[in-house]
Length: 222
Ligand code: SF4
Image 1: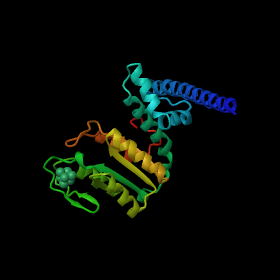
Image 2: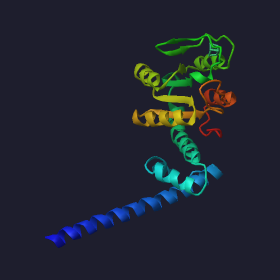
Image 3: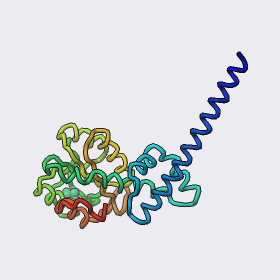
Image 4: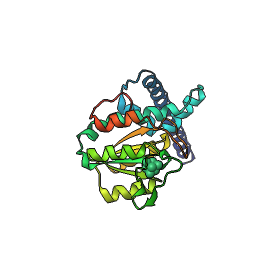
């Protein structure tokens, strides 16, 4: 009986070691592909890369840190890859079924907008680009919201039932937003801020206007 238990422990031990080794090999391969994609902006084996970025994220980031490379590359490539996967479906979605979420930090510091159940209500005072951007997007058919946090996004998604979402934000917000879209079966695309922070953040507005005005299925800035 004691020998059988010993054999069982040995089997479990071997399984754990081989499993960990297999995960490590997969993570190293995933890391190489992510680094290659970051350098060349080409995605090979996208499904495997997506697996590496989502399921093996912790190990992959640890490998990047171990070799002295900035692990934010993993997030950059993950967002670019998810954008690439969703963009065609996003473009096929009728524009009145698309929502745009802008972060409140993009507003001017002296913004006079007031908080409402639909987020900050821009009065297009002219102190920042947000007012003009909202006007342009709404004239095309988008619904646009300035949101102070993710709880607003969830509530507005429940209320307006979109099929596709364009989110603007910092890398962390875009990552969380794209994960939320995946869970809700929405086609999510993220535009990352040029400068993140709590106030006075900046966005490449040319890219924003190009995105909403032209249905380019393969924009080079995503
Ligand atoms: S344009 Fe809109 S968002 Fe910008 S400062 Fe004025 S009210 Fe605020």
